[in-house]
Image: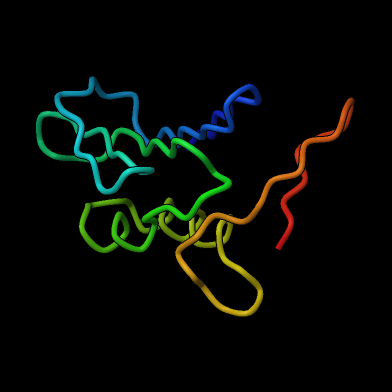
Length: 101
């Protein structure tokens, strides 16, 4: 799994596979899933990580390897319980990305 974050617009792409994208399924206004020809998940696009996105729906409705699903839950789970929303990201000059939970 590779995470690509665009600092200019706050978009996140979670790449789960190197397969070619056959189609894209919009989950909501902020979340899309790229699928290969066998409906395997190639990647998840989040337009703005500052807004809620449909991780719960993606994990329940699409075939995602259990190891990747566990990592996604760990990355985007709030301490008080999983809300399905991405935590806020704080970007500081000359510093690594810090996830606030």
